[in-house]
Amino acid sequence: MTELTVVVLAAGGGTRMKSKTPKVLHEVCGRSMVGHVLAAVRELGPSRVVTVVGHQRELVEPHVAGLLPDAVVAVQEEQLGTAHAVRVAVEAVGHDGLGGTVLVAYGDTPLLRAESLRRLLDDHAADGNAVTVLSGVVVEPFGYGRIVRGGGGVVEAIVEERDATDEQRAINEINSGILAFDAAFLADALGRIGNDNAKGEYYLTDAVALARAAGLPVGARPVDDPAEIEGANDRAQLAALGRLLNQRIVTGWMREGVTVVDPATTWIDADAELAPDVTVLPGVQLLGATKVEEDAVVGPDSTLRDCEVGAGAKVVRTHAELAVIGAEANVGPFSYLRPGTVLGAKGKIGGFVETKNATIGDGAKVPHLSYVGDAEIGEGANIGAGTIFANYDGVDKHRTTVGKHAKTGSNNTFVAPVSIGDGAGTGGGTVVRGVVPAGALAVSAGPMRIMEGWAQRRRPGTEQAAAAEAAGPGTAGEHEASHNASQRVGETPAGASES
Ligand code: UD1
Ligand code: CA
Image 1 (cartoon, rainbow, N blue to C red):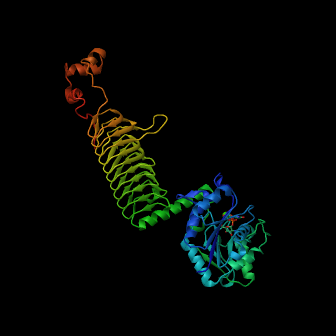
Image 2 (spheres, rainbow, N blue to C red):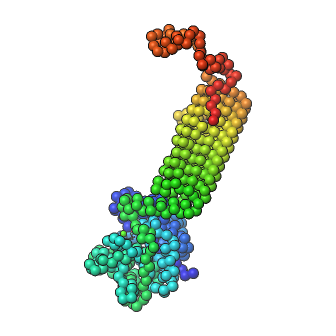
Image 3 (spheres, rainbow, N blue to C red):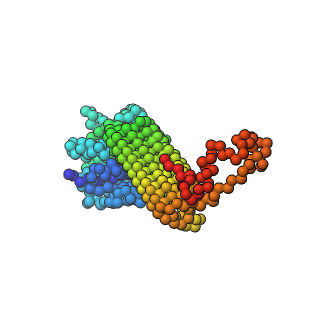
């Protein structure tokens, strides 16, 4: 294999983004634009990658180093043109260190695929070219450099918009900016390219005419899908490219056996992974490094960022981040899983439940209206409706543990630190502090007091009093059972909810 150096140009300002974030760091599908380009480049297995930085390099440089620690970073202090940028890259490597092929790409073309680069390099090698251009045949060539072909279709030059004649402006084959060079030719050409043009810049594209003047072969290969070579210069283009990339990703997963009911409202980041027979319902965003195992159903209307969803789990109308959802578990609707949530196999986090830093064991359930923070809940335990794990005392956070198969009552408050033993229980409305031993029942609500005839005495003349009067003296009506329960406080876990 011949030596391959890839130069990624990312020194430009990107003023049309109107952003404090450098253009190439703007994200589509969960990755920066330059991150997409570097990912495609990495697939080529190059000998070295040189990234040219300039504008806001204090932000771009560490970002690139984080993505590709081996990459050489070359600093272009002043942006004097694409040829100048490549010269800076070549100088960073050292002319002597450079052989084989040099591939130049831009940092703002997030849809670029390794496959297209590979085809360009294959053509370049097969034809023994000095320069091979990845071109594009487009409907609207305005602003691009045009590929000027002579007799027999031979590529003679690339002419920039501002330097083109009317006739040349009518050409709809454009320069993507991605070019493959013979390294020796490039080093020579960079020394000869001047800046005598409309923009007063050193144009890399001038290398084409220099090669032709020297009688060296030049080629141009149109890319199959022109979107691949499109750059995002403003936020509208960024969104348009994001939608196209998302479409590509979603279609890719469907081809791998994932059911996506509504591709138009499904957003899957580049780093997410889905197994065959996953079903994604409308309005779902699978973001970051989210991983979904087979037969899981996600949605509708759910956002998962950096989550793991186990096989056969169901996640309905849920917002989750850095959470692990076990196999065949159920989450939602309307659940909020914050970082550090780990739900076991066949577990449940139900409606209007918020969890954070909480391990919920296999088959354990938090079915309704609860906050579970800094907790460990044992397998098979059931947390009653409306339970608050009060983890914060205003100064420090404390943990709560609930043992295996414990059953806690509704409307409890666990004032952490709390430890509820295996098989223990709590009564409805209990405020738990400290330790509940295994198998014990904790009840803190005082015995209920009954004041007979209160409504008739204290609310005379109201519909309430009339209803009480009609029911007759001392009658509990259909609520007799709950009246009796109050007499037996300490014997039954009144108010436990289960589902
Ligand atoms: C360039 C090409 C044009 C092509 C178009 C495709 C030249 C002379 N023209 O034009 O033929 O159709 O791209 O988009 O090459 N950059 C640097 N340092 C510089 C100048 C540019 O790093 O000194 C980077 C920019 O950040 C950008 C890329 O190179 O990513 C292209 O530069 P830009 O000035 O946008 O070139 P265009 O005029 O669009
Ligand atoms: Ca441009």
